[in-house]
Length: 429
Ligand code: GDP
Ligand code: IMO
Ligand code: MG
Image: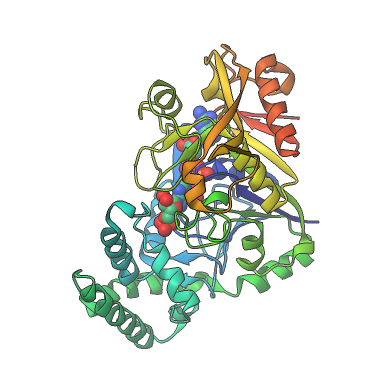
């Protein structure tokens, strides 16, 4: 079967972009299925660092067609900016190699204003969103009030009128919340140029995919965010508003489950989270600072989209096992193993203690998760620099032991590990 789905197994930023970029070398199509420019996917290639927010991570490969699926929410102005920035870096992007689903939803300026207003109103209880308008855009989608990318194919005036009406409707809410209303006409006008630019890229992406699959195309489906940010399976309400999990790939592209033969979970070798919400293995102090890095390197743990320092901690095996179950990972892959070099010992959470009771699964409620303390297993560390290892045999015994323990805990094979941010810094079985 021709479809591989690549999914973040934690709270996002697992290194999905670099993995998808690598898998794209043997793919015909890379298709993103969820989220919007809340995502930040970093690819390091030949001394250049590419940060993608909307475009699929196969875009650096000449032979790959990139598809933006119906499950996405797209800010057209930011998409045009991203396309132009990549073109300036010498990457060819045209309707020949980029297809935008006509059924994706548009993020309007009103959605962005509403996202901010809602976060301000929540005060200390805020979710810590990326303020890209994601939640309000998905709310309009499920409330059947959204504007879709296909609407950019309409007569300009009709499209502008729709935008103005949507922004005016949001203004009423913004005023209620004490926020500032937008100039609906000016805000809508800023979108018309982007709509004109994007017209040629828009088509029914599901039909495109089906034809390609019938012709034998190999498709990589790229998840954004991560399993623990899933609207259903994450620590609600500290989640995003889409389905980054395996099911989301099917609805977010319009393909059937029998076309899928590989579900690859990407997990960082430790835990990070950005934004609010429970994180049982979160650390403060020296270990956290070492995991995060100083910020001097592009791979250090500072948000690709917002620049916020990421919360860091030991690997949460309870959550990783849960993610493996939710998605049915056929395999797991670990990224950033190189960052663990030099620790005397490593800790791996294998259970939680909640109100004096041991549990090997995430608890039923978020309040319980807030009270969970991690129960750790301690494993030996290693001192060697592993960034030039390319085979499992070349890794230090302690690194192999760490990998094997995670695979056993999650009952999923680990056949790939990354040991640096560059495309070829991969250890494969
Ligand atoms: P994504 O959102 O899942 O694509 O991940 P991000 O790009 O937001 O964050 C992952 C960060 O880790 C990026 O800066 C990558 O360049 C970096 N990275 C990925 N894999 C590795 C690795 O194996 N080692 C190191 N040192 N950095 C990595
Ligand atoms: P990638 O694809 C990490 C987090 C935000 C916030 C919550 C809701 O790079 O892994 P939203 O703006 O989606 O309404 O924010 O989700 N979040 C991410 N965290 N990586 C991401 O994407 C994220 N996208 C959203 O920080 O906690
Ligand atoms: Mg990211």
